[in-house]
Picture 1 (cartoon, one colour):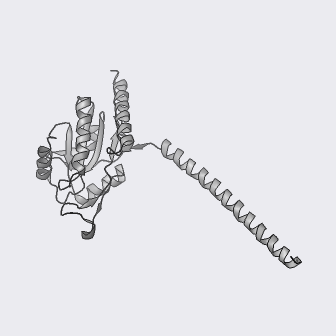
Picture 2 (tube, rainbow, N blue to C red):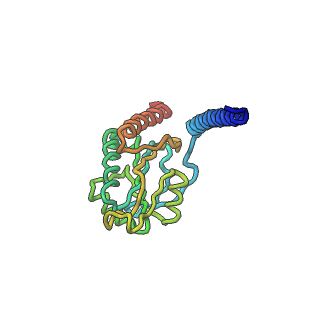
Picture 3 (tube, rainbow, N blue to C red):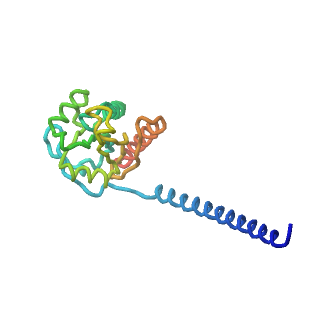
Length: 220
């Protein structure tokens, strides 16, 4: 190996070492940033600070601020849903029956299809699935206003599917079956997938924790 070849090899090895060091430091920094983000998300408290007027299945005007003082669960629904929405409602209904106290827990199902789902459609849906109860609101409203509010306040949204993406005539929206838990002070405690085993367990545990905190605040 001549002198020039040795020099070239030395430069190549040095370059590889520099690249490896850069990748290591970049990975280390990225992990630190991600840990900071996770801590920030954990520490960040979100509250329902803005209200909106909605209409329930009986045609009665409802405001979310009226639920202050109760623990409540909110999720999306739409009456033409092929099945997932009814499944979420079953989970919520089981929790409602377990709590068995309308002064402690309230359920809210907001249509993600307000252009179609008026009060009569929501009434028929709740009756069909045996979900009619004064501690359960099925809500509709102005489409743009309501959908924007749900995204901004509860981070709940849906995407309308193209014709090619639909498995049937009622397979209209793509959305995750998330449930948000709000405590008696209108603090959003978290988001949960009721179909996921760990998510369902976490939902139940945090729900009863929120109810106990509410009872303590009442001195009961």
